[in-house]
Length: 520
Image (cartoon, rainbow, N blue to C red; front, side):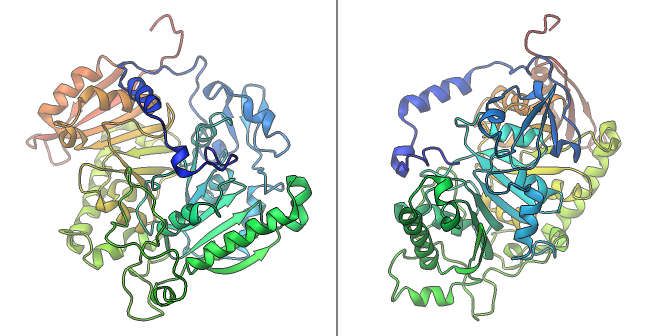
């Protein structure tokens, strides 16, 4: 659920005040380590983690009370259990996804990446992950304490996020489908601004799925405690916005409605002679999404010469798209990047990951890692090399470097986000089992303090988690001197090409310690 959605606050009203920003900045600048809660235990491995988590790791009972009827989450002794229920899927997320799969092709590899807005505890994403569909789930930190933290504890990709006044931090044409199940986002308000943003990040031919108010209002109006007239007006307004974006409503069955974005904008541009609003954006980078404001204009798709052509290039089905040449590179739209460079990068990361597995014994343990973070992902080669293992990687593209590659990562069927590592990441403590930092400290050495980045890495790393830092040896020596004072056990090892290479690896294991541990 988006912050302020129930009150229907305007985008301007949702912006944080200056005192709020200053308070956050002060908090984030504090130089301290964040302890794990007392009794913290290593999370269950996937797929067990989809259904159960340790209570001590996320000690919040609020959702078990507020959402008891909806079957989101239960307390069972020292564990949380996730039955897979949800507001709009009382028979479980699996059955709900089966219903969606009867309407759009979820099983042939054509749909790989998904976005879940207002995800709750991310049961939709959790059950899609079991079906080889990778969902990015997001929700704010609101009255439903720690929704996203529960999602991550379950081993599901998720981030803290909100639809407010800024663009979502994803490139254009990123997701094969987007989903809202009673997410309470006012899609019909503010000239359709939020639906326009969904349109920006959907691929050509991508799907938007809506369940919950106002869909099937004739059946649910009494339960929702709203008048039939009000719900009907809301649905008509949403239908109008979708039509203005040139979306086609393909199905409405029971509680589920699905729209499809056009594969190109040939007809849509012609329709602007009649439908004046929203206009097409002009001179706006479609991929820019770091503190960039949303605008009430349609992000134009790449030019197409034929009505049957997929704008920007058609993607292969999963898993072929992982290693296929991404359309953005094939078309030459990423300056300075060639097909040969991409293919060489893919080979390089297979070699490097093989080296990691030879020097890090934990990589050989099947259930050791589930949630991984790549702090400087480039083309997603690290994640691609691990695609056959039971884990997922959050691929971060730093905003201070060549940030045009995040679209390539999504075209490979992977997920990620923009990030400035001088700032905190939009996630909870103890999110990741392994953090990979390739040349991150070289990239930021004149931008912010090394300690700032290391403290943030420690915050989001689980106790006994692993860090791989790849950088120049002189930098690694400095990093190690700081890391050893952070309750990290670290050692520098040689590059995969031998001891004569200046670039080396700093391998780290974070020690286990918790709040109130007198020995520590």
